[in-house]
Length: 74
Image (cartoon, rainbow, N blue to C red; front, side, top):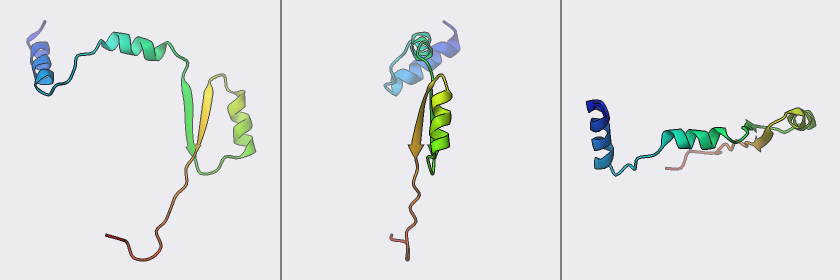
């Protein structure tokens, strides 16, 4: 173990940050097919049809914007 690694381990221990097996975590993430997420203001039929043509799971999230009318509340 290098001095830098020991210093990092000590800092993590001081902050109660648990050690993880990064290789194992990455393997677990990369072993699954990706999910394509698309936040969008309107979901058209064309967009739905396009999403169905993709090999990967596509999730379309409708994002609505709200505007406060009148003076801002504090």
